[in-house]
Length: 458
Image (cartoon, rainbow, N blue to C red; front, side, top):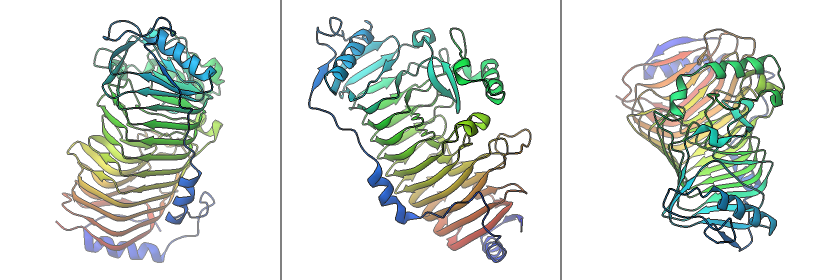
């Protein structure tokens, strides 16, 4: 049964009971339901990297004469030499001391290296795109491509980390990187190549292209730790682990308000912990992804087994978001003990997809989350997101629970929009209070909605 309704609290409860009574059999796209009792095993399986007690300080003369502070001399040669020496010696920390350091190009990590920027260190990256060539394998909005290197990057490495209390500044502004937000030619070309099954190694975008880079990107890496630093002025997505296993993001502060400046986007990763972080961003605070359209289906790797806890979300399009590039599927996501609030935070929990993307979103569980205010809906699912046309790859959403979630101010409590041929199933809101909603909730094409001790006081 498909229901379209605009309701206040009492009518919403009645509709939920009717939907439960008419719930269909589970679809083939749905897997076995996974609940909170699985979270401890997921956390136990995430391995953190460990490093020998060896420091390789970038000011040491052994590394290309040593890096010079002050923010004017290029320190990249010294950093690259220290990373190479650290890796050759079996691992340790490459230490960036307090001070200002200019880096004219990308830093590529190697196995067993912990890049450690001490408190008081500011690493200022060049904002000249050509400094980030030659092209490397990366992803642009969920599509594989060879283009500019992310400023902090690793490919096929193991046991790596970026740590410390320092600041990494990408140098992006309205005159550098961000202005390419309006340039669609190379984006459209890349998407056409992916839809036409052009091999990734032939999707090469070199000098003069306008594909912005993500800031921190470990690609196909195992045992990754991102901890303690601050990120400013990212060209695009701030942190984007891709096809990684055992990723820990802890105590990171993201203050970056450019276009598409998502705070942390695990993509096609297995085993991710994001905890004790602060996100103040120009786009989603956390957005879990798994590839876009044909390219996501070609790789076919879901994001799964992800825990988010004890984080603070300020400005952003969404607090914790699934999608929209999720063609490989997303499952087993757990969110707890977070605080989300800002007049510039649009939604708290958000799932977004469309029938060009396909894939599935299942087994997402949220509990003990306090929302001060959001400008749109507290809980939003939209399966017609950014979709000028319909496609054959309908997404499926199932087994999503919110428990002990409170909100004080919003436009709507709920905005839940499924598809006629793929209604949203298996939603449970338990012990939730969404107060101060200015407009009625919107529910379209939803089946099997359960509201238990749910209220929406004025």
